[in-house]
Image (cartoon, rainbow, N blue to C red):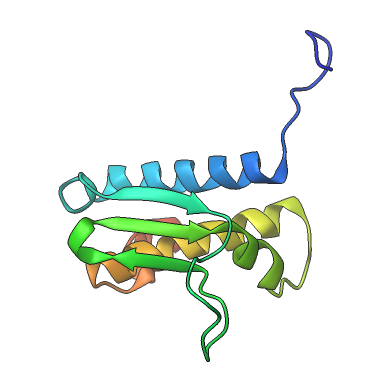
Length: 119
């Protein structure tokens, strides 16, 4: 139940999707030529069986320009030193950055160097 005086209901999946979408849009603004046709998708789990390295957190399909982020492995298998909303969001953002870096063949830190520069 919601109304004009109650906050909108948001699930973990909704927050995950919003974080992926906002981070993807941020990176598309920074790299418009490179990411204009890139597609970002969210899946609950990878469809492939568990490999020797464990569960993937994302998959990059370069020829299709697709990035698939897997919500449960990112949310549940990340070891955060502080388990709060800020750190969970930062973990999701870092996975998007690393997946985009893999797609573009760049270092994740090179995608938005001004964002991490402290004056």
